[in-house]
Amino acid sequence: MRDVDVFQQALGLTPPWRVEAVEFDPEAGRLDLYLDFPPGSGFRCPVCEREGCRAYDTTEKRWRHLNFFEHRAYLHARVPRVECAACGVKLIEVPWAREGSGFTLLFEAFVLALVKEMPVAAVGRLVGEHDTRLWRILHHYVARAREEADFSDVTHVGVDETSAKRGHNYITLFCDLDEAKVLFATEGQDHTTFGRFRIDLLAHGGRPDQIHEFCMDMSAAFLKGARRQFPTAGIVFDKFHVMKLVNDAVDEVRRAERTERPELKRTRYLWLKNPSNLTTKQAALLEALTPSKLGLKTARAYRIKLALQEFWALPGVLAEDFLKRWYFWVAVRQSVYTRIGQVVLVQ
Image 1 (cartoon, rainbow, N blue to C red):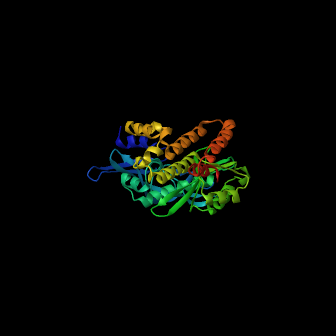
Image 2 (spheres, rainbow, N blue to C red):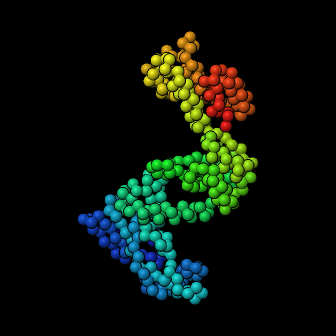
Image 3 (cartoon, rainbow, N blue to C red):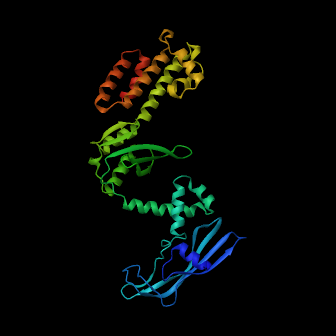
């Protein structure tokens, strides 16, 4: 079998396209495949899809393809403009690449798979392309996916902010919790982000009154945005942010008590961890500090935190009563414990 026949089958080319020549330069680490079509070949009109249109003229084009082993591979072809009786002269679409791209579809698919796992700049270094060219690929497919997005079934939305780059530069993400996918991303972390999400939701077939719940942190800006733009939606504070606030409250108790109880020095992470995550040494120290006879307020605050963690494993019919009883237990204690209850319920 000739080398051109091997690459013809490997590329999956169908008539009239065929591999005419192959050039391999091992020193340059490069493989060039030249594609062409026989004289008199007919093509489909890209507008009306009429078959059998003849080439009017051609334009030389090149596309970066997947590597051949460790060697860069490029496809070259004369792309014809065809003369259609109904549509006039039109440039055809080649089957291995999209219009306007300097990469084959397979190369673009490879890049899209990589950018899910690593930064675009790192992908650029890996494949040997400038990251600005790869960003064009990403922008194209994101824009196309956004155009086709349907939000008509979205009912449960998760909201969170993340740092876009160093400094106080944030973006807010709105995610479909049922489908585990991003719906919308926008700059900022204030209440206006919900207004922009509302506009985008409507633009993609969704309705504000169909959103049953927002799951988010206790940001005052988020609360304001949700209540103003989605007044019928419920608000759920997620476990991560609730427990983070409770941990902060336990640490606040420890810091206040540390001046009087020197045994609490350098024990911060002891109270922030769950018992199952403690080292043997930490577990022994915790056991020595938690007996009620020591009267440590920090130890009691820690037990209150552990009790709250049971809430997340309860079925809905029991959870509300448990939370009320837990809060009553905290509220009737001294003010240092009330601080722990406030971070959960006062919002």
